[in-house]
Image 1 (cartoon, helix red, strand yellow):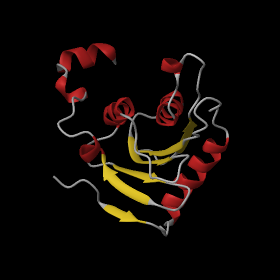
Image 2 (cartoon, one colour):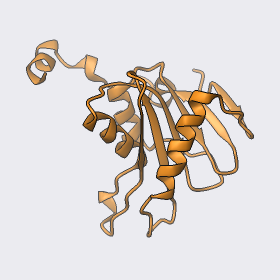
Image 3 (tube, rainbow, N blue to C red):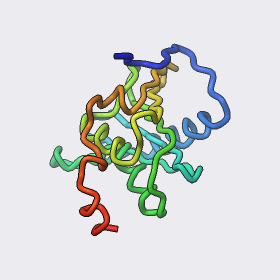
Image 4 (cartoon, rainbow, N blue to C red):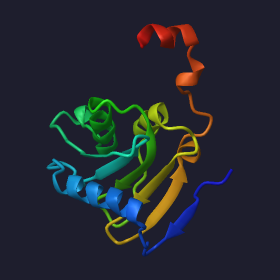
Length: 153
């Protein structure tokens, strides 16, 4: 199985990826991370072409943390968009950060296995994975009976 599509230490960003990077950086600057001191920003491009961003929001009760990826997805859904075309996560440390397990499942809900997830660090490192590489053999919406999905729409 192929894990990463590309790895680079000083990425040159194309226009569309730069838009995601800038949105994730701006969101990361607003992160509320007083306990871990590890701010994270994320941004996505919806299938409709809009960019949505989110940041991590910590809580004194640690299990109640909201990940940056979840915030970006929630913003997309709140705007009426239903699918992810591309995703970027920008962590707070020197190492490249990938989405946590729960966020990988969240990504899979709104993105097919071929959708790219760019993981970047402040030092300029970048690794790009597909959703399928981050969460192989994933359980997704297609596993549910079609009549159950029709009832929810």
